Amino acid sequence: MQTNRGAGNRKRMWAAPVICACLVIGLALIMPCQALAQQKAGPAKTLKIGAILAVSGWYAAFDAMEAKHLQAVADIINDKGGISVKGEKYKVELVIEDGKSTIDGFGAAATRLSYDDKVKFVIGPSAFFGLASTPVFEEAKVLHVSSWNTFQPGEMDANTPYAFLGMNSTLGILPGSMKAMKKLFPNVKKLVVTTADDGAPPYMMPKVKKILASEGMSVIDTILFPNEMEDFSPIATKANSYKDADGYMNLLSSPVGVASIIKGVRALGNNKPFICVQTVPADEILAICGKAAGDNVMTSGIAPLAKANPALINEVFTRAGGKPPMFLLNATGFWTLYKVIEAADSIDPAVVKAKWESMDKVETLFGPGLMGGKESYGIKHAVTHPVPYNMLMKGEVVVGGYIPASPLP
Image (cartoon, rainbow, N blue to C red; front, side):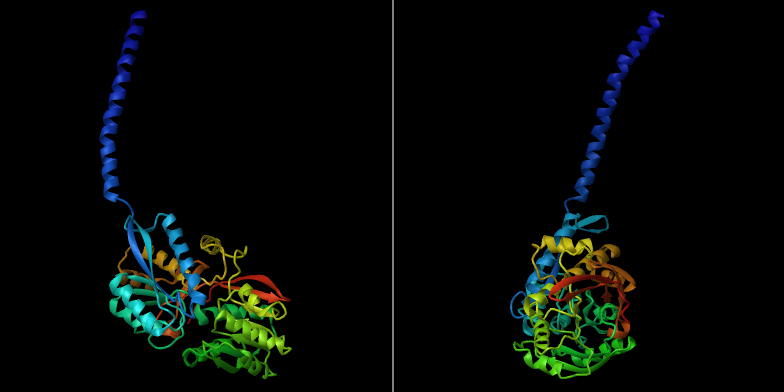
């Protein structure tokens, strides 16, 4: 028995070195394979995403902060490892060109992005500047995602296959705004509309009136003003003159424009509901019009850091420095483009375009979005997303919430 135990001990003594040797040999074989796999994968590649903004000039009131929000989205994507395509990761390099708030400036910026920077995807522009940039991007087959649309021919239509609209814009915001308005101001049926005359009204207003009519509302008159207007008292006076109006609706203008009209109407003793179908935040309006005028006002702008906001929106705001204003005109289109590129599993604009056209639902910073626009634009390239609504009541900002996305005809 003692001899057998000794033999067993000798076997175990030999087994330990043999196992260790096998482990060493195994690791020696595995480690080069792992190193080879890592070498094959390599570091994350870079994908240039262009952005065409007005970071100087009058429209910088919107776009100066937009640049920071775009960079915040790029940082969030990169912190997640980048954009995943065919098993590889692409870190985003944001390339911003300044359109300088002029048509010629945006045309030149689009040319630089397409031919000097050689980007294949671009975020922006907003307002009517797409009239200058779209022809350049279409010729270069650059997939471009505008953040606002004025419905003028050549911005985005059946003849612009590489153009997409990544933000609600007026028609996308309007259905959600009306649902919120009916809850807050159920007696508003007859409206006076105020809007900037940037070339959009002849194309936009028939569509707006059709949507309003579907909810039993009508437009008494549309009061136009130039983008560069500084004294809005004549607009307020004219709006106030329509005594049969139940309320007022502003469609296009700067934060100063909409707040000045509200202030002017209130100074005339008129406290009828005022609905801002724009992304101008309530706190921005209040800062300009003052507490005395800040009552019975509803806006589709975002309330920074509100609990009702999707977490992504608050993260973008915080990463960008946590300072207002927050419009996110371009940032949500950027986020959606990132998700569509991953869904297409390609960085070829033609492939991404085809994939996007096949989708009925997309992801946005605001939550689940829908694709539509065939009737409205002649092409199913328009994103609609949940619509925020917030109010000014008795000189205070009151956070409302979000209305789910409505399909755009």
